[in-house]
Image 1: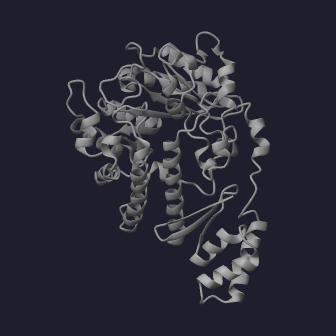
Image 2: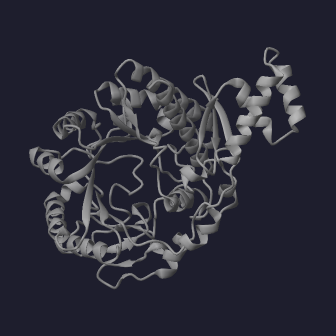
Image 3: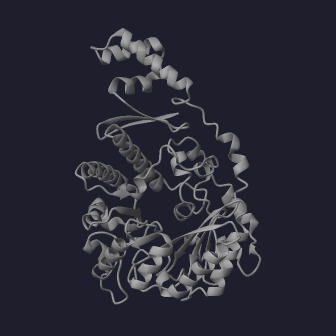
Length: 455
């Protein structure tokens, strides 16, 4: 199976199963599309008709090159991963926890999927004992893994900052003699960033995710303080301060776009113009019918936006003011392992979320939905094996739509939570997400092609 498209002046052919990417001229592009559709005689006839200046010898040589690429498994290759999918469905050991250290928030964002940080419950902060138990649980349930990831999330985790620090200190002590290495990430709305937060995160946090939606009017329309005023003026100086202090260490400015800013590229560029270079902008997570929820009618506009962003990134890179966009990051030589390509993020198997009281859920987006409760740190750990098996069986071969999708090895089946929100099933297919993801992959591949061409 191949996927082909034209973008920003490049003719790109992707061999789906092998991941081989070919940037070709128009003649080769058309020939590849016809190669397994018509006889060689008909192919030669069509190419020479469409390109009068090409000779028979040149067409014959081109066909030989295509045939050789096919023999090498770089064009029209078979998908052999189907043979190992059933083995992988048993799931792998735990590798990451999302610690919801705070079910409280000092902001009141209109689109918050977590019900203003409370996840449908009451204000609650994680105790140090629960945090320590979470670290122990992760170590105990990650045989064979050296690197373990812990995300501090909420609500707003800085409302429980002292406990966050103590959890990190405890984990560092547990590294000694356990053969484990922890990588920490902090996701914050930035309101409470101070010198202590900056100093500790620069020392201990592998990555920091900082929330900002873009232009002042867009950000302030959704990301409000409890008194109803916008947050832009309060958070931007804090973001500038911590990013500058990190001195090149990992961070992301993460925004959310909704139906209120379908022209979200302008928000990304606004953030870039503030001097930030590591950017992410996510489509809103919302129940269908919510006023700010994206609709299928929005897809054409959003696809145009992603293409416009990619082209602007090319221009800015040439001008020496380039930036990184999370969804366009693509490693063509050392990409995700086979398991991740097939099964995705490991939701409900390799990755779990922990509530302040110690309950376990497949990920933070499922917290509060008792149907997905997987266990409790204080009551036997992950006891709902039936639920774990359900998530372990969710991969790109468990759904007919994914089996035939050209982007399956990049998408890995998409987000289980988004599928559930949109269709009522973690095995459903959220069409809007699929369409946006495919366009982002096309743009990402194009940017890598451009990088190779101009290197």
